Image 1 (cartoon, rainbow, N blue to C red):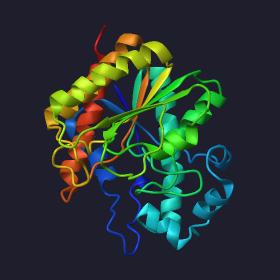
Image 2 (cartoon, rainbow, N blue to C red; image 1 turned 45 degrees about the horizontal axis):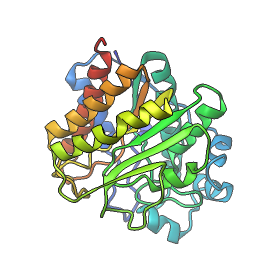
Image 3 (cartoon, one colour; image 1 turned 45 degrees about the vertical axis):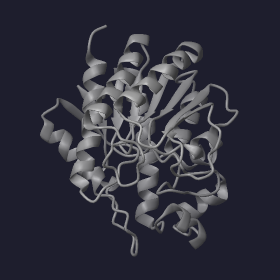
Image 4 (cartoon, one colour; image 1 turned 90 degrees about the vertical axis):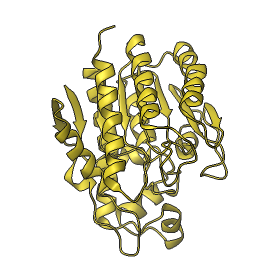
Length: 301
């Protein structure tokens, strides 16, 4: 049984003048339904403001919730923050938190949005408004639902906002595998960063995962993995600089799920990045990631 978190308002209207579209979030849901996988869909509640302000600057949170983000900050985000996008941001935050709670109960769950890993304390960036990974991780530890969380970021871009927001917070380890020369130009410092060369292929990527992930899990011993499962390492991604094939992405996801299953660690995934003119193809990659994680997690040890 796949536990999948989705809300109709994940598909927000595109802001005027922006090229960014939110339709892939509905297309991922549709692709999962069409796959025939046994699935329960869960609708998230908006993340309460107090939990967001425990991580983000309250003045910035207020700007987002009033849809009054200054123009210079909106330029960094990549689109205007409308009332609909503010609402969507709160739901995506709640979605990652709900997926984590479901994973703790069932072993694996997926949020059909989220992964806004570029959002910083007082500003958004790179199509990210508020950082659901950081907010959810902080809340889970503060509520004592889990003592230690590993945020595993396999998006092609470094999780700079997550690293900044969670630096020094006990019980949370940030591990980022990313293209060294890709956005952001100025990298933050995660608990561990693995910078990858342009054009890295399937074999090279899997070798990097094998070199670092097992030892981090063994030494940190997380009780939960929050997995930023971006599909932008794909060779055809518009904003990627790596060269993973469909098979390479599946091997990545199955390795992550297998090592978590073997260690008895629940895993919750967030959608993360994936870009291209054909939104259906991008959504299909996201759906295949979720299906591979669910299938691998369901296997017996």
